[in-house]
Length: 365
Ligand code: SF4
Image (cartoon, rainbow, N blue to C red; front, top):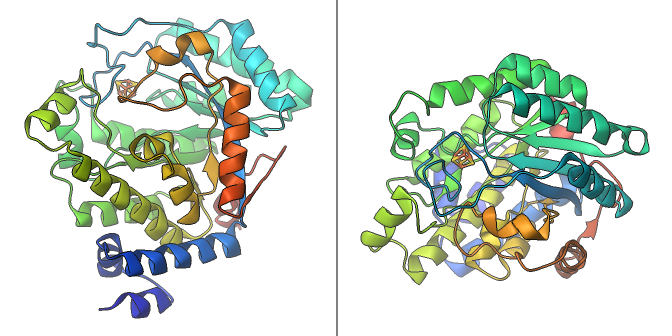
């Protein structure tokens, strides 16, 4: 097998995905990323879309072993954003021609939370007659709740599967009957049945994760008909069970972090080559490991950026992992900085457009 012949193939199989994911030689990586960027240009254009990311609450009933805002992390001060502030930021996104806003929070399933999100969605849809696209990212819910939120105006939903391998998923979550892979997968199914554009993704470079696992993750995206993909390197949070273990085992050296970044960029490229017409985010976690991590992802096939619009006073309390970048930047700085990043790779910004995944519409045809 050599990289040129694999990249010329009409259809890639699982062995090809594993082969491509494992490339490390600089000349091979150049070929891989150039091929993925060419597919991006052909299928989704060299236009990158913004989703203003508003982290509106860090309260969470879950205890995922890798996450900085897990329920048992007593170091975190919990916050909720008032409805008026969420609406003001959504309006700001609209005025800045972001096209879409993403509302993200920890997971809660109580009636007050469900009602609150529903009310916020209804009011956001009144901004400029529904011109602002809305993506939700608020964890596992019943199908009924997802339906209510859809009816209120959300049309995209992000729920990371974290790993398509149920055994690996178990190592990332407490075994309390409350963090179940099959439930998460069933949520993805419900979202698709309701009519959402469904997004998912995985963490890359986890202890015990193999190239075959990552290839299976890409096959999982295809099998689930996923329209939007948000994935990134595993980044340690110091006050989590997984983060402590990884540090104790000596697995968080600078070399190990660079390896996770390389693997993540390879995942973006191979996913673009294999799925072609989906949206793929250049995630902030990439930039945590390298100042130009997001540019690398854009050059390898990503086409979505999520500038932070979380209120400045809450940003420090929404750290899923350590050293999250841009915490000190105002939303104007984020906007300008990301636009410069987009221009630097030769792309342009799709101002004022929803930038829906072409895949969502192509698979309905
Ligand atoms: S990953 Fe999500 S569900 Fe898990 S603890 Fe963090 S915010 Fe909660």
